[in-house]
Amino acid sequence: MTAKVLYAEDNEDNVYLLTRRLTRKGFNILVATDGQEAIELACAEQPDLILMDLDLPVVDGWEATRRLKAMAQTQTIPVIALTSHAMTGDREKALAAGCDDYDTKPIDFERLLAKMTVLLPGCKPDER
Ligand code: MN
Image 1 (cartoon, protein in one colour):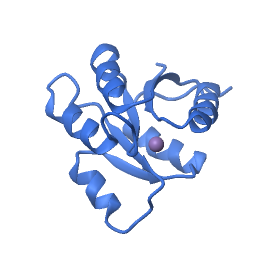
Image 2 (cartoon, protein in one colour):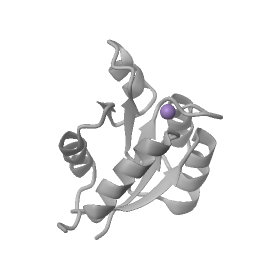
Image 3 (tube, protein in one colour):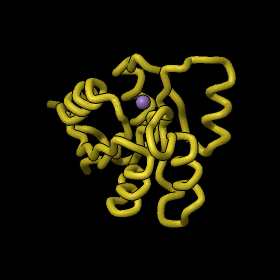
Image 4 (cartoon, protein in one colour):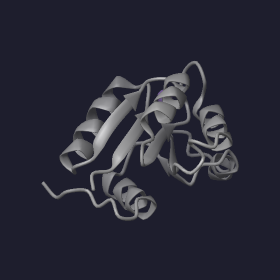
């Protein structure tokens, strides 16, 4: 089964790089460039996992996650928070907002992939 992953990220370079790498691993990637779009796409597309940049325009990643976790149709979708602010307390804040896991940018691709795999039982990315 190909996992559908929603990637919420406003930085063009990050979108390009991570989308390309995840697509090559066999994931089906949907991109949202702000928090409001992330919420709308999550409701409409029911992704298997969400990668959520916390620093997003319109609605930030913390608030978008809180809203997704408060809605019946999206609350079971796992969310991995991504932030460049690797500050003490951020992990706790992300988990308090309802994120299932947390990782820091710049992305360590293998480490992120390992975290994604844990949250995607039965969705093994294809090896290409
Ligand atoms: Mn950002």
